Amino acid sequence: MSAKRSGIITVTAFILAFLGIMGLLIFPRLPFAKKESEVRQSRVIVPLAPDSGEVYPGGNAERMAYEDDISAKIALREGESLVSVLTQNFDGDPLDEQIVAYRRPSEIDGPIYIAYVDFDDSLGGYRRVWDFSTPLTRQGTLNLYTLDMIGDRSICLAIMGMNNSGEQTLTVLRKKPAITRSGGDSTPSEAPFLKIAELKVDGSISIRELERTSAYQLGYTRGEPFTISAHGRDPVSRNLMDQIETVYAYNQTSGLYEQQRTVRIPGAQIEQRLLRELLSGSAAKFEEFIDGLWYYVDGDGTLDQKQYIYFDPEKREIIFFGDQIQQVFSWRSSSPTRYGLYISSQNVSVVTLTRFLEVELESLEGIRLRVVEDVRIKIGVSDPWNGSYRKAGTAELRRERTASPETNPYIDSVYSGYIGTMTFEKTGNYSLDSGGPVQKGRYAFFMLGDTEMLELRPESGAERNVYRVSWGSGEAGSTRPGQTRPDELTLVRVRLSTRGIQELHEAAISMTANPQT
Image 1 (cartoon, rainbow, N blue to C red):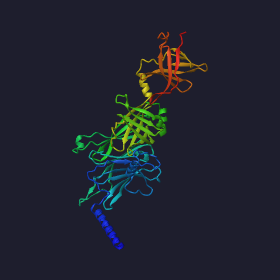
Image 2: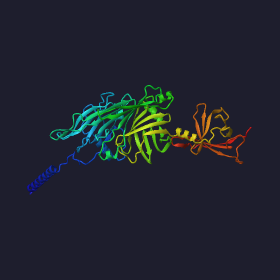
Image 3: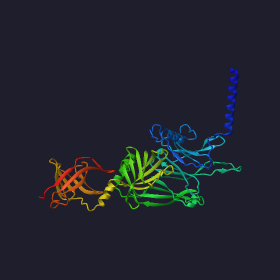
Image 4: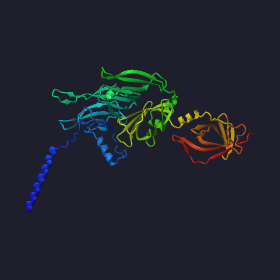
């Protein structure tokens, strides 16, 4: 009975194994089988360091998806370190290809290399097809993305970044079509990309993307080729802020980008000593300068308080706010440029979204931004962040002062209170006698919005103080002879910051005007 049962089990196992093998043969699960109609969005993935402590809002599932996307489809060679991966369908077949950026740590200050990875039918897997050396060396500034530069629907690969000399670099590679042989099979050419532009400048480089016609979008006509704009210092000018803009256009005959025109752009006249100190080549110095809230400047030169950017170097965060939508980015790295900073940041919610910012000094109270997203997708409603910004606080304060001419900044009065006797002179000088050494300095009344303020600047070098002002009148409700203000003055010390008026919760100072002698 035992032998019979054993035979039945053996036969059953054999039948199940046979059915499993037949199922695999009939319904193979190819790892590369995809619908030809599937369209893949290009993705640029910047690897995280193992100890970066990055937080993924989606938890382990998002981390697993992120780590799957970041994986190169080939193994790197010995002595190579992965920098970035871009996955996209370059040749129209059912399979994606990859651009793998890597560096060789043994090469100090060595370049960033890219490798083109394609699927090989004969091998049944991916292989490394082609390698290219880029002019950029700072891996934290690398930005890879694809676009139709020429307007003929060919794929161009843009490689942007910085080298160790602090120069911006841009390389544009155009994907060659596959070679069709007599048998009808298509194979990639020996070098799958053709270099059509390579620039470096001691300033900034941007691709001017033009809006193309509906006929182009529908596939009826070609589009207008994009131009490339490079801004660098004017070597013949003594003003460090003067620039030269060089525009490069695509030449259909040569198939390359060539210089089209140059334009001199005068910069702001800033005291050169302060300018050299601010642009000393230290990222920390410029980070300290841009720390805080910056409002977008409209075309007519007014501040748009509905769109702003907040730089927080201490928390390493950058907050973008516009159209009631807030985007928070982790501040990954900063690289000094001739006119400011090149910043790499990563969205804290969409961890595969990286945003690069070129921040340039426009004046001692203004900056100019050029923003590039490595993935050309819209997260909610994306405002155009490119343009000029003004620092909240000082610039806004000056605007409010000039907008309120009815507020006399100086008075001729003497007030007394528990802090002592304060004398205001029409010359803008004040003195405070508290029974000891007399404090002297400069003062000014001004308006901030609908609130009147008083600023005291002691000449001894002590910290300036700002007070919120309220006025009252005596029983008669009048001012004393020779005064231009009511006879009761109340001061509350506050602090002006990028968030506006901040209360310090100190006791109010009440003072009464002295009789005219």
